[in-house]
Amino acid sequence: MVRGLIYSIISGIAFGFLPIFGKLGYACGMDVTLILQSRFLIAAIILLLWFLVADRGALRARPATLAKAAVLGLVFYPLQSWLFISAVERIPASTPTLILYFYPVSVTLLCALLFGSRITRSTALSLLLVTVGCCLVFYDAFLARLDGTGLLYAVGSLLVFTFYLATVQFLMKNENPLTLTFYVICVAGLVWTVAAGGPGRYLALSGEGLAVALGLGLVTGVIAVAFLYKAIEIIGSPMASIFSTIEPAAAVLAAWLILGEPISGLNVTGMLLIIVGIVWPNLRLLRSGATI
Image (cartoon, rainbow, N blue to C red; front, side):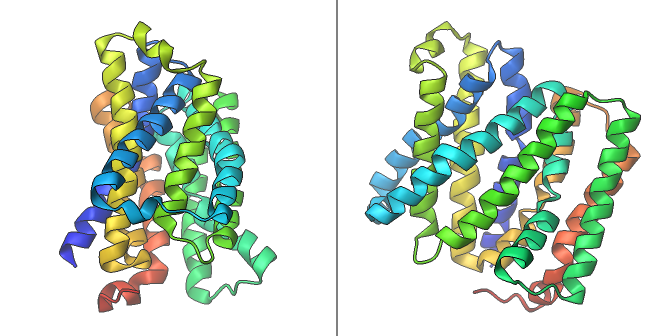
């Protein structure tokens, strides 16, 4: 079980480095299309090589699976990623991640509306904590007079991510999550490779730029996804979700250590409320150590 928890934390930290690599990519002269091409195309290539060696069964996909991957990879994932990385260009790296973590509230409310999901008292308290935490993040952003367009991009990323997760809940039935995710990444990689004008632009990057491109694919793509699914395999989705909430904390700390971005008291308070709000409904599960 401990191994599964460690895998969850590694995955959360890896996902938290996405805005950091985004900022570093912009500093190296990369634009949004090249940053996203690096994240998805390089991740798809490395994951393909890994599956060929470790789990060829994950590459077997039904036509229905490929169709679902096309819907998610052509529409939701590229749009959400573009909005998120565009926000990173204009506002501090940690802010889009903290705003994105309002998704437990938005997804719960949307699923209640679309699928009739029940909201318990524990869930309602969780949603309240997450909402207050995100409000503190927004308030801090307005106090700091952050770029309004950047904040709109971050909110847009949240909204698209909300519909993405709700759609995934519907499309994931009778699917291997790892297989579907891999093909979604492949489709998104093709989308951004076309948008970036092909892989030839890597030839113009400096050594630092190539390192950032590799980091985007390896850390935020391969490590984030692979360790998440290894954690789910060992301890189940609920427990993996609890410990992957280290992502906003990782983003805030990495932005401070690597980019020199200041950490405000409101940001820290908001981040802690968001994490508590996500963990709260699962405390009983956490105490029991149960898995599914």
